[in-house]
Image (cartoon, rainbow, N blue to C red):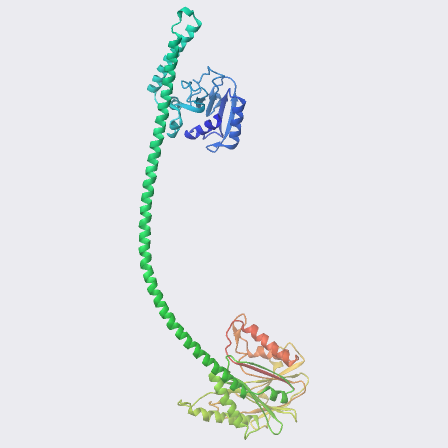
Length: 560
């Protein structure tokens, strides 16, 4: 218990001499083994000012100037004449004798069986402890605060010492010379005990009163603090409620306005959705109508041995189209065309172009003548479009006529080329004229002389088109020419629009280009027609990525 008391004493003092030390030293002189053990257990768990506690034990007098301890505890019952005179500087001296405040700074005592301590503030100040926590005095059972009080206590102590010395000499001397009778001794002892008890009671009452006053002040201050805090919080709450009330009015008004706007928006949304649905239904219906004008699968299967059609409109309906017809003489014509525009305008123009072709074949059987007649019809019909010069719309196309009996292919083309992949060793005779006669080699190009193909066993013949559309143009009075090619078994013919070649994409966002498309088709012409179509689809998907499709796309491949 004393070890805990002494450790707690250190908290109430300022230790100015610890800056150059690694530990906090407590010296025990004459301490019993139980107290030493208690101190060592405490030192293993506690620190003073971040310093480790060192416990030093001594038997006999050893000056503290040699030890350098911060606290000195002396067992006065074992060393009653211990001299403290050399140990008073910068060392807190603790005695276990409550009557030994003459030398010690703190002395333990027992009051009604409880361990207490008394404090000599005079000795503490003389030892160099200039700062001591004020609460420390309140914990002591007795405090000597100044020299006058110390002197008064010393006179009172000397008086009683004198009384007891007389008692002692009377007991040991001649019985006849006893200075006091038994009754007088009892009176003196009784008076001393009464005064001592009264002093102790007064000190306890004073301490209790002081504690009560301090608690009352603390309680008062806490109450005042709570009242002020309550008033501040009440003010904040009131202000917040007022602001919330104002904001709620604004929010309610805004909510009503938003609900009105939402109602209007929902009506507009319903109207837009309804119009969109009507437009979508109309476009889907238009797509079905347009599809009815295209060459049917049954017609293509009946007249073509092996083929594929890669048809990919930009929108639901398309300006691109492919149309076919079989003549009574067994010849079969196939038109691959790109009408002016795309989407709904392109689709309407495609129907005009198809009907113009249908009218043209009523009186014409040669490809060049068919395109000439169709051009005339388109120009006549578009004169009524309201523009000053008449409509300049029309189509770019290639018209292929298959003469199966003679294994010939007759081609007339407006701005769109036709590619024929054949074996490198074979010769395809080509003639060109507006009426089927004459040879124009300038209109046919052998691709092996222009590009480095990955295959050396094939040639690519490019049938160049007339550089004018089927429609109003500066050359509208110039007749289309036609090329006649002798076909060989295994030849592959490709007719197409410009949509695939003009599509932006790839790592740099550039056009695919006609040259790359021709290389792709010729290199893979040995594949089945269905595999070639799948190759086109995958190539286009990888090329376009997340970029928007810019035009309608049509590529048709036919194996002879």
